[in-house]
Image (tube, rainbow, N blue to C red):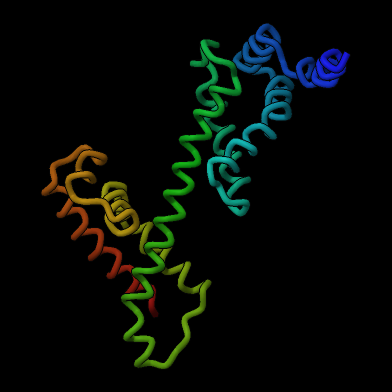
Length: 199
């Protein structure tokens, strides 16, 4: 009797989950470009994506943007979805990638702020001026934008993650000498951009 009650309690959750056929039909409708199907897919899986991203360490302040990026990737890559795994599993893989990118951007910005603070501390002490957070963020953002993609990657891996040159070379797919050249160039460009935006 107790087992029957337990099964009865769980039944609605099982029934609410879309079956493989329903999932395949929804994916097919999305791929064919049916707007209503995209809305249905987003409505059904958005809470799941948010939960995945939260579990993967994405902070609330970044959650909405990260979720939006996951659905942009879904829109882009859904035609390649072959149904070998359940759709939530496939979405989870997209969430893992997006969570890693979001954390990476956050660490990159934090390291850049720290570097900016280190660079500007003696000047601030001499001038006796307080630097506002908004002004600092704008300067850091502008300085990071001045870096090439390769420079930004090396800068982030070295300054933020503290990785060794050999590890960075493996990640970036370039020789170690290129890592050091890019890091040198990135630091110079970053400092020059900070100085330029000082006025």
